[in-house]
Image 1 (tube, rainbow, N blue to C red):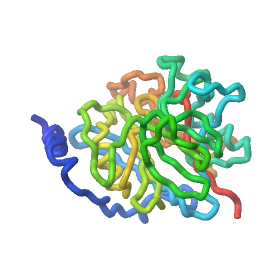
Image 2: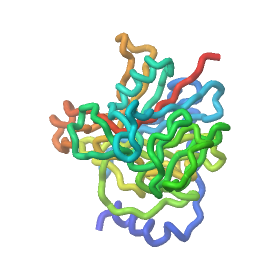
Image 3: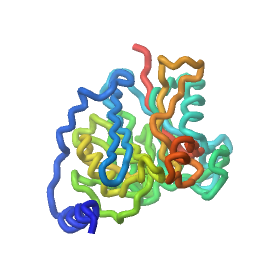
Image 4: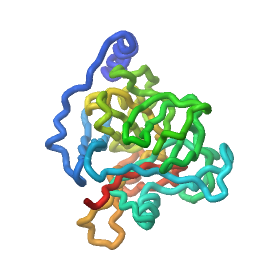
Length: 300
């Protein structure tokens, strides 16, 4: 039995019965992308190879705002809700709408799937989504990141009866990977992952994207996702849409091109497994996702 599997067996046996607190990760050494937004990257080569990209966002940073995918002009609940976009195209369209997104990542799962991975087709989202106070998709008994109209953030289960009236923004995922500081049980399947967490005091939003299906990064289990998010400072966290959807990008103001959108991770949007060094080296593809999240700063 591998050391990795022994660790997960131990987690399975003691996880839900133990009380856990976030480890004291030192974010002061992380790269500052913008005021209130820091990036930490880590590559593990011993044992199972994995590349992780973590961002901490200070929700109390003056001028900081969150945005997400809005609903279609001819919106129909649970039928036609959003138009799919790659994370970078989402950034571009938000910036054209005077929301200068600095950081963006994918959010909830969507249907229909499978679909042409890079085409901007209509989609129906899996869980609660609210954009600038407007309902995009109703709740579906899944955990959601919720920002109310007073700027208070929470992670909680939302249902079809959840009232969006007092919600400014919401996105959802599959399930908790971390709840009340306790890592949730999982299988041992390794995939690209996107996790969205929140500190116990609601100040810090934690985003973790893990590359997978690659020679250089095989992916993670959802329990690993929860463990790493707890180490980064999260108290509650959601396993968001993963696989080929997992994407993290930013707007690099020092970029040499007019379009300064840059990928931070190496997504496999086409769903292929790139298990040789040559395939890994050249294989980057972006998926058009049903909804995405962006972070931006308003000028003082």
